[in-house]
Structure formats: structure tokens, C-alpha cells
Image (cartoon, rainbow, N blue to C red):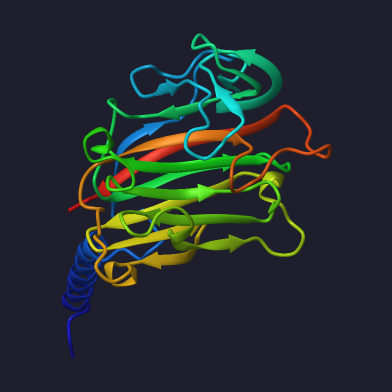
Length: 284
């Protein structure tokens, strides 16, 4: 008969070996949609004092009203009327007001557009933001990325990853898309995601994310993986340009080629709330 003490020692040893093996496996093969194998590389929790501007070491406010290549109707400003922190969130507010910028351009709407260009960029990783988007015809909120080499390569050769875009006429739908040389604009590659029933994305916060690795980009809403793009999805002869650092952008456009203009049903101001933005890299 086996001594109980010896048997117990063997059980403990087997348990410890199994636990160590399981732990090692979780570091190298985390399930998709989980941050178990990701290490935080950069974040902004937007916990500044109410009414304060964004952290200037992390964000740059782009300004101007030239239409931004999409015939948008707003003038982007850095004013506290359009962008500030409040109760632990970033607030980007589109306002219906006649505004003339320092360049002499006059628009009937103002809003804000932030970027991390020159502050932070990363190639590959998990990029996510918890956002409550606005709702109204003619609104165009977005969380997206551009290649850091945009000044040298130009667009779309620099690459673009739209983590989340919404047009106000589709309150229950968001889009995840990539744009590059030969597959930009209406030829961008990706997919929409629709909430169930008559829900609107403006009803609550949602987590929008991409997991970007050398030969794949995966799009998520909350815990749902809804689109995967790989080089084989590109048009024949097109180049996969997702091999260098990208920077982040957040904005709320008004009008433009895709959403169309606001109409009498659109109420202003239109507000996007961002609880946080976080960027991870692989642990190994």
C-alpha cells in the first residue's frame, strides 16, 4: 500500500507542473479578443480636471476648415468649446455656429480633431478606445490611424486603418476599414458591424478595437470579432502597407461626401465621449 504522505507529495508535484505549463501557454497563445497576451504601451484615461484641455504631451489638435479632402462642413478648432475633459472622459463637441478661423475661412459648424502625430506611433499591437458616439444626420465620428510617414509618402500610400467610423444616418452601424494604394476611398477593404434590434451606438459606450499583426488586421466591437483583413484580400498588384508605425486620430466631422449634410432633424451640439484610449503590444 502507498504511503499517504508520498501520494500527497506526488499530487502536489503534478498540480504544480500542470499549473506552470498552463501559465506558460497563456503567454504564447492567448485567445483572440483577450488582452491576456498584451502589455500596455500607451494610454490616455482622460482623468484631467473638468474643463481642462487634453494632455499636450499626448495629443495635437488639428485646426482648419478646408474640407479635409471629404467636403466636410466644419472648422476644426482647439477651443474649449469643442474639446475638453469632463468627468473622466474626453469630450469632442460639434457645434452649429458661424466661425471664421485665423486663415479667413468661415464655416457654419465647429468641431475638434485630435492626433498623436509626433507624440506617439506604433507598428502592430492592439489599439482600442471606449467611446459613446453622437447620433444625427450629417455626423461622422471616427477613431482611426494613419501611417507616420504620411508627410513623405502621402495618402493613401501611408496607409489608413479606420478602427471605427459611423455616419449619422446609420445609428446602429459602424464600419472598420483599411485604405491603401489601389484600395482607398469607396474601394477601402473592411466590413460593417450592426447592433441588434433597434439599438443605437449612441445609447451607450462601446469598445472599438483592432488587433494588428504583420499579416493580419482584426476588427472588434466590444468582444465581437467582426472582420479580418489579410494581404490576400487586396486587389491584385496592390501593396500591403501596414508594416510601419501608425498614429492615432479622434474626430467628429460634420457633413462630407459619405454622411451628407445635417438636416432639420439634426440637433446640435453633437457630442462624442471617449472614456479612454489604450494601446498594447505583444508580451513576447
